Length: 151
Image 1 (spheres, one colour):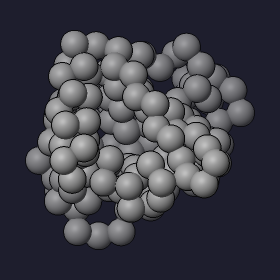
Image 2 (cartoon, rainbow, N blue to C red):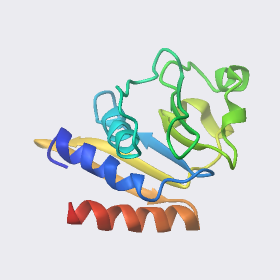
Image 3 (cartoon, rainbow, N blue to C red):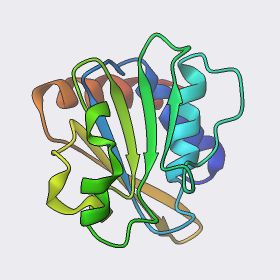
């Protein structure tokens, strides 16, 4: 992914397979494109407004979409005990679609995602390394990659 536009396109490609009950984890260093990818996905799902990083609020809900979408950012968590006391666990259920930035900050208390994407800086751009962790995640990834390559 050479630039921000490619990152947004990957996010948009992920929208086709997004469904309640799925979770997407986004990993990578600061500025690697996690929120940009989430923005592409959320806007492709029909959210007309601004998509901001939930770094300070921890979660941004998007209930106007065809999904019960929750965008999380756990960057500010100092350790996994903050996940336990956050009260956010209830959002991870079959009726919700969850995007999580910095999932590693919740430690092993957060269930494995259906799909994980690790974003990295490389040379003059970024790379995205996806990994499916469930059968629905593998189907979602195959659909997204097909759409992204044809965009």
